[in-house]
Length: 229
Image 1: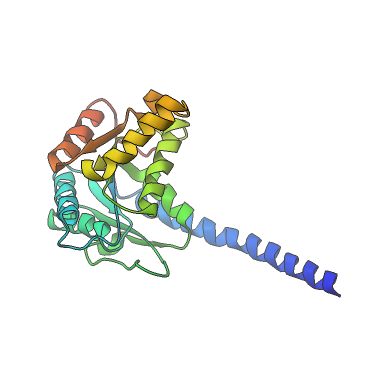
Image 2: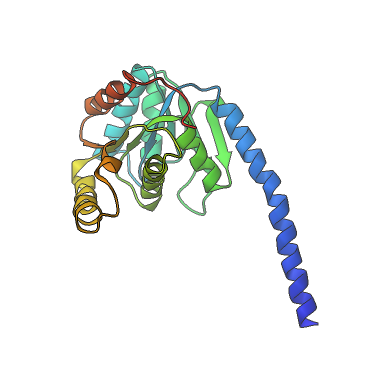
């Protein structure tokens, strides 16, 4: 009897897994259809816990404003903190403001600065991450936590393995990022040789909004704007 119950449980899991494919496909189709109509964008990442009085909130807002002034749209994760700052800057600049929102047990809710027709909800992190990577012409990465680091290293890995085209990865905040980059250079590159120097070529650390645009402009003066795969 116990074996029959166990088999029944496994069969239910297999059935649920199979039906989940349709929901996953639906998220991909909805995301591709909406994102393909938006045009060139830059994604801004950072902590959902950053408050409006934090200097990096203001800096993210200023960067987003500059980005839309240069003809790009802005994509964020759609939530509060740095994400809200990015959408706010794009909104105040009169540019495209996209939010790729995901339901979480804490922290996440739509911010009010996303264009009404450009707020897309996801249940699956991996589908959402595909949208960021495919439709971004660059990543601007503000101080953040595990989720921010996840997006950063996902992009670096995909570029390193040539699964996507190269695009600029701009880390904002020397005081926040320099320790990580020192460790990558000293340990991964020099001591253990687990990465190559050219893997790090597209990573930049800056502190000012003008530097972000200089990097984007320099890169796309030599390259067409298009989806990354």
